[in-house]
Length: 282
Image (tube, rainbow, N blue to C red; front, side):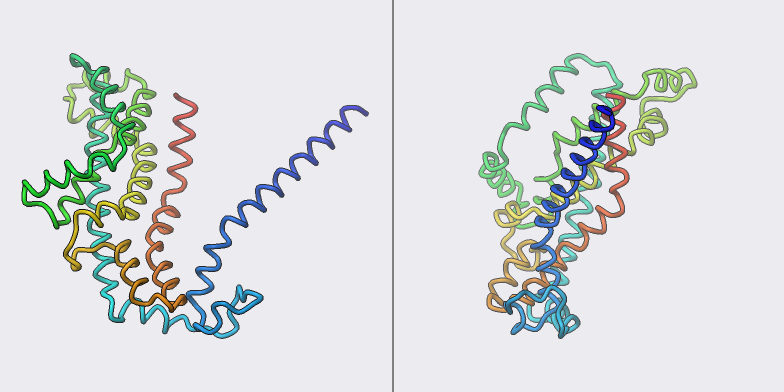
């Protein structure tokens, strides 16, 4: 009897927690639903009350056509963002993976101290290095180029730390066996360790893509040529130009986050796999 009562009590508790989490989750996505709905409305219907979550009159093609083919070069901003984000993500992960392999599988003097020193730099706020980086790029004549944006986001301590911890969880016998078979350091890294670390690398790839895509500060500081602006500055300029047209602003905002949804949808299983593998093996 007591066990049955306890079982019912636990079941009610789970239902209550589930309902609470569902309610909180629903409240959190309400702004996104409003943004998506507004992007498809006529301007006169944007602030009608009660809110029309599903518009009765649609203006989808016209709104998005105005965003993409209007006065603002939205397509150019989009291309610039894709270019900077893809290059930054690729080379950042390449550098982080190589560093993680060195810190986890190779022995060299001062390895642990260098690793601790790199991780310790995570406590330095990004804003502290803005002026030195500005002067550095001016000195190298890289200011107002996409190259300075890529360099600014290339080094990632969190990626090095996460991938290193994952590689440390891989059995050392794998790399030892590769050495016995005659594989060198580079081949061991490319053929043995790198494929096994795919969940960790994919997880950090998604995180890095999102950070690079959403970067606003570096573009605002280091880029002055309007033809080099990325999508985040582009949306800001679009908002200044169409400040009173909320349907168009919401259409621009939805367009700006589409790549993030695609990347997250394609890579969500790797995030779960990477975090789960790390928690089990680590």
